[in-house]
Length: 151
Image (spheres, helix red, strand yellow):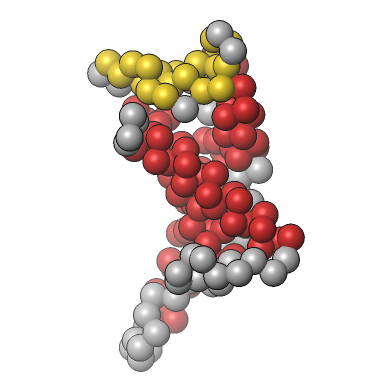
């Protein structure tokens, strides 16, 4: 994935056919993990902490649903034009930001599904863990290329 041009609100990226297929696949299966329990604090003993935690969980679920509907717009053919041996992805700044949020949700969701390992080098013991690890790495790859093109 390579940034071809950026002018004002318009971003254009060249992707190989493989990269385009993987990125489209990530968008199509978003979200790939369930939203796990949300914990604001491990030590907060305020009686209203549970209520705040519930509100946060509801807000995150609503945000994720909005991202899912916005992901559909990123799949439009007008944004994925054939170009040489790959695809040219054209995004407005707002769509680029949405794509970054989706990729981050995928990456963090997979990390949580793996048990929030620190360090990440913990051994993989199942196919499900392998799938989450691969999705996490792929989402990170695209995030990196969107945020730091040419690095």
